Length: 76
Image (cartoon, rainbow, N blue to C red; front, side, top):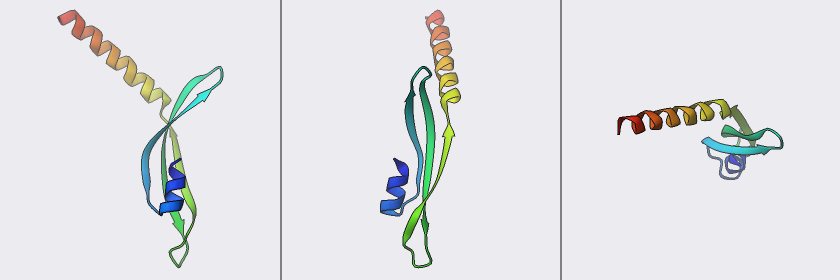
């Protein structure tokens, strides 16, 4: 998980894609970012995490790729 790296290494981690399988709903895709939270002495105390649901975007991209492939097949 990206927040583990942010806490352990003290590094900003961006654009990590996590896929979560949800019973009766399929797979959901999330883009995660994490940055360490440090105290005045520079010690990591935790992490700030953002999680964005990318499922609709990924599904739209797949439909677009399929449509482009179909058009290219017609041209051949």
